[in-house]
Length: 123
Length: 155
Image (cartoon, rainbow over all chains, first blue to last red; front, side, top):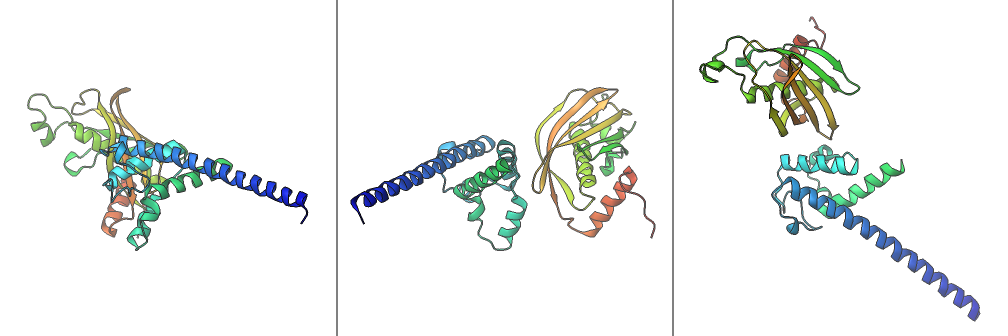
């Protein structure tokens, strides 16, 4: 490979890496924003202090939000993000033995909200 | 109204499934043991029974919306206001409008009017689940027929 070709290849790699970093930053910013919004919703609809809510918190197991409290949280999320969280299906899946962490750990819940709200915006 | 049986609605006056909204009539009885205690010498409908009346209107709105396929249960009150005394014999109109259709639950704005004046209003959370048994489902369908939401069927 010539020196020019190697230089062009290196530049291309730097460009791709830069785009990846930018995409990750955008995703992280979106996740942070969604997490902050959801954490505020939980804190305002329950007795859970905002500072005790982390992305790894399980809404029911760690934050001890009961089923009615969770309905309040879901209602506020539905309204805020203009989506319809399929909580009934999730609860049925958990009763059937499915791992609830997939739905109720905040990191995963925010990820689902971003995907759903994003696809709704595209549609 | 038959207060002792928690039969709070007398009939459905209007149902619009597009909004969706329901308006039901409810006449407070002239006499009831309830009024003997609430209150002696000053009979008024208890706020909790007005709340139940609004919850039943919300429940029948949900039943009508999903073809009586699931049982709505009164799950929560986001806010409630009791604005005026409701006396025995009052002719009431009970309004219910679904403002949010969630997964397995709904949020319903309700109000009670008497002579065009707002007596009470509440924002209610209703959960809907599969009917726990056929006896309850049959009772609810029978009540739906009495209220005019379902057509009478003969075996």
